[in-house]
Length: 270
Image (cartoon, rainbow, N blue to C red; front, side, top):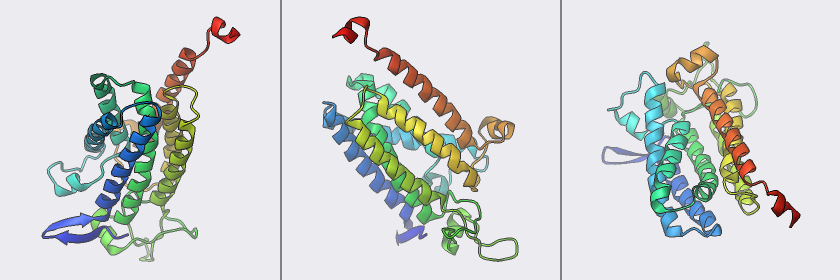
């Protein structure tokens, strides 16, 4: 809950930026290691990973622009904010899809290397969200409720007091997601060595994260906008709508990959 660590002149060094940078670097290292397991060149993965990070950052900003009616794209807050997570995931995926043919790498093996790395990056990123005070949860009386600092309120607008002026304690949704994604990373890392077909890790990540994100949205309470009026029409948050779409696409991908990897009659006899 310390949004700003120190300043270099007038430039603030934020805890969110530090957490995000550390998560990105570690994620890139993990992706290269997993890619090497599948016989892919590490130097190519590092190169592709940097472009994927750029695509993810761009995608997070683009989706933020569409869901937030009050965002000012020319402001410093827009530049230093993390953007929308799903936009980052989609932007990174698009970058991989576009660049993998140019690098002459197998698409599904590359995505299997990046999927656990994305989960690890999210675990670090949500720690940054907690430090900054963004992405907060609904009020709670449970023992794990968090009361944010005035600096967090100044940076992100996270509420501190209830209607009667009492201290307000909120669900630590940032920490819940951080630890959950750390567990997802561990599972995907373990599954990578045991996968039955290329693409299994990406699909597993997509299904697990979409289910988790759909669920945790029920206790989120920060403003998240309305993408093309979908939230107003469905009564769900923007992230819940996107989660349903992602889950459907992952289900289709899973069916296609399983069908393609079924042994033929001749193979099953061997």
